Image (cartoon, rainbow, N blue to C red; front, side, top):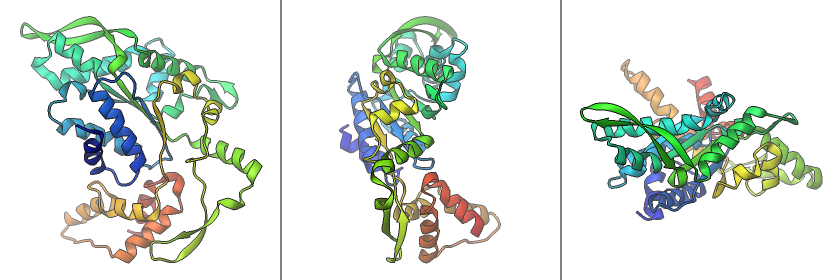
Length: 326
């Protein structure tokens, strides 16, 4: 598949975030051609579909044919890595979970060679990577430092001893085997909530905040004066270092993608068009009681406009606004 074809499949599940989807499509393409580098970090407020992009990637590999050995995907919380890192089990948990997922996919076809292929070409999605900061409140965060170092070890093409479950001679066996992590794709995501304030204070200290007040069109065509500040175009690598991401850790990512805040037009589509939208879930609930729930276009616009004011929580604002109404 070409990156364009991969993008078309991913975008069927994700509304907006075109730049992030393009970068993710290229990363998947590099993964499929066994390019050594292609790791991706997604930075965005809560509700800016980081998890949705990861789920779209999972669905892509679940449906694509001919790419089975690249389709072993796990999602792991960075806090878990940090907790285990402090107890010396940081490296094993990621590779062990890849091995368990590969065995689940293969079942009785899980011979040693095939298991090795599936695990060494896996995808690791790390949620809440911003929680493993090396510095918190100006003080070193030992758990975060060790967690970053442990993930860095895996991303540096190391040979790691992995206990591979294998189905041999009619039963499950365990074979400890060295696996090089060169072909494993890492996708990390986090809200980096304090980064927003950190960058805002740096930028406005010199330039002031007046230029960030803008006239923003509502979905009904009227204009509203709103304070608009986002990280895109403002954040630098130095900001990331000050936040607590080490230079060595960041250097292992091809791209650090700043996700867009969701504006009213996108929020309207997310509210009504996606299979797992708040409104569709509400419709399904009332349908069980013989009640048909509908919404007018004007109501959708007003809900989306109100939700857009809470840009720091993204699509989750739709649930809060709609919940009060319903």
